[in-house]
Each structure stands twice: as C-alpha cells, then as structure tokens.
Amino acid sequence: MTFAGTPARLRLEPVAPSHVRELTRLAVADRLDDELARAIPYCTGEEWLAEIGRERAEGSAEVYVAVTDNGEIAGTLRLGGMLTAESCQLSYWTAIEQRCKGYATAAARQAVALAFDQHGRERVCSFVREENTASARVLERAGLRPTGRARDGMTTWICIRAERQEDQWK
Image 1 (cartoon, rainbow, N blue to C red):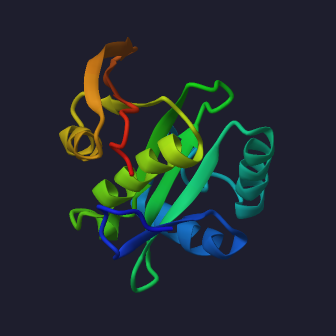
Image 2: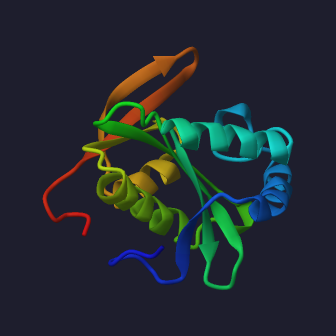
C-alpha cells in the first residue's frame, strides 16, 4: 500500500513468511540489540512469525515490512499496544545498507497514516534514545512531536507523539 504524499519508491506489506529469511540476514548483519527485538526477527523465523500472528489475531500489534520499488527490504515497522482504542506505539528499524536514503521517513509517514486511517487510532507514540538524533528527526518528519523525557536506568528517552487532526493524513 502506498499513500499520497509519500514516495512511490516504498511500500509497506504485512510481514509474511517470504520476508523472514532476508530479514534475519539483515538483522544479523546489523548486530541488533534487544530493544529492537519486537520489530525484527530476534528468534527463529517461525517463532517470530507465530508471535506476530498471535498479536495480529488479538489485535494488539501489526508488523510491516518496508519494501523499495526494486524489491529490497528497507526495514520493518511495528504498530504495537493497540489493545486500547485510542493510541498505538510506533517502532521501526532500517536495514543498515538502506539508511540515509529517506526510506525510514517514508515508511514512518505511511505507518502513521495507517495508524490513523486504517486502525482508527487518535494518537501515535514512540520513544527514542536521547542521543539518537537521526531517529528523532525521522519521527518528527513523520509528524510526531517531542512531548517529554523518561529515564530508564542509564538511558534517557524522548517521548514523541502525533495526534490525529482532521484531513491531515489523507
């Protein structure tokens, strides 16, 4: 699915078994840490797909793959915490070889539009490590705005969110 105002060079697809092998390769190449585990395969592909399937069935999360116009996987996005009717949390990961090409911003914009228009959410939230200025910029370009800070051990997180506004995401 492609949305108005986003590059046609990227589309979001629900995660499918056909994506897992390449996602696993990309995740291993990137040496990902545990904080990204819910957006990418962190266990066997079958276990990860089963978890996504359970979350999808209960309505608590959706995971999408961002695919470029030449068929390469640019990354993943997860809309989680959707058991409440009002909001969801956006998390995303961009494959290391696809960074700095505008894919993260395009995919985040599409995910925000999906959250509002397809999933009927009023708010999209995300959390970014304070030192991760690139990710904060991606989310700001996708329409989210900083709303505060939270501290978790040694990590300071920027709380960032967007609220639905009439006709903004169409």
